[in-house]
Amino acid sequence: MKLTALIVLLGLGAISLAKSAPQPNIVIIYTDDQGYGDSSCLNAQAKFKTPHQDRLAREGMTFTDAHCSDTVCTPSRYGLLTGRYSWRTTLKRGVFGAEHPCLIPKGRATLASFLRRNGYQTAMVGKWHLGMDFPGTPENRDWSLPVQDMPLDKGFDYFWGIPASMNYGVLAWFEGRFAKVPPSRWTRKKANHLALSDYRIAPPYHAEQAEGLMEVAPDFVDSLCLTRFTDRAIKWIESVAEEARGTRPLFLYLPLTSPHKPVIPLKQFRGRGSAGAYGEFMIETDWHLGRILATLDREKLTRNTIVIYTSDNGPENTWKERIKKFNHHSAGPYRGGKRSIYEGGHRVPFFLRWPARVKPGTHWTGPICQTDLLATFADILNQPLPGDAAEDSISFRAAWHGGKAQPSTRPPVIHHAANGRFAIRQGSWKLIMESGKKAEQRELYNLDTDPGEKRNVLLQNRNVEKELFDQLITIVTSGSTRNGTTTKNDTPPWADLIWLPR
Image (tube, rainbow, N blue to C red):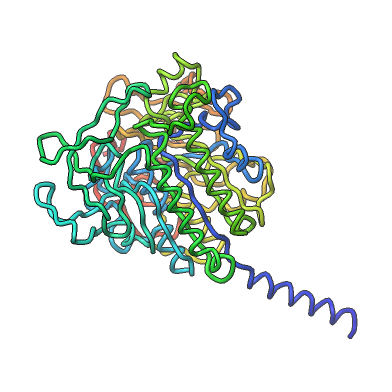
């Protein structure tokens, strides 16, 4: 055989091999109220260590300018799963309770449904908090009937978890559409002496309903959430590992309940770190991450599995007390925390590991948003996104090759606070819009020179303000950030858009 013919055949073989390369497994671990400074590899002054997050950073890529799509639970989870900002829906402020029509309507594409259509087996284990339809009413439940409008209806093959944050009740260990032990008891929040300004959901429970009480299962205990979630996630990975090593990849979405209140570290973690129960709870959270990583190692899935670890918003308001008492800054160098329009409210830890493709120990310093995941996975799978989905999702796959961020070609990121306030981020500039409160006026910050948002430079940069303001109006009113979509906002302009020209 001539040398040129051999080279051609080898080349064709390489192309064929590339085309048949297995799709990557995907694991997203989503913590609850974890601040940027609660990862020890991001905060040299942290009062506790997070060795497994540090391992992800060491073995993968750290995104130091990553953002959740809102600053509280429900809208951030919507943005992560759908690639669309929640304020485009009917939810303009705040969060849902446990019982509510799901914010993700029937037919809307999610990470899970998109990946399932492309051959993935999909599972969610943990906290949902996007609304569920429970049988009957609190006064007249029939738990023999299935729960509707829930994860199994949004693209997940398997679900095990709880409906929402624990302060909203309907607390039981749900598997699929049923609770093995129904929430047939009643309780209210109890004092938690472990942590600052906190509560517990633990027995004894009441047999009779009374005003102000929440539905709870007799066997539910708040401190068991992390252990049970991780146990179930591991069990599911083990059950599908053989297929995941071959022809049918896995997608696991694991939204944990920590370090959100109640802060209840297990006894084996108490006395560790120097930030009280909160630090101990973060150490426990990190330990469970380590259990997932060890499972991937044991099942020989590590090399071709994308692991993403990030948080739904910044730290709860107890961050202020932790600074005073322990000198631990949960938001790191950033201003504000959960619910806030400032960086501490929405800049979150974001680690990505994929040994088969991503160079270890790399960093990306350009802005990304959790809404971008759907477009990024579509890019990796070389599959088009529907025109009626992922309206605010922009692929950042190119960043995975490493190196420092170049001037961003990504369209602006829109930030949104729990009180309805907006901001727009493009490159180093962040424009925060005024709200209905007199104290909340328009602000402009250069985050390259002022990451702590201490110097409002609006008056000196009116040209930047105008450019960002025009972009904000276009993105908010057009119904999408990315090109090629066909949908509009679910409502006409609303009261929070006081800056919108009329």
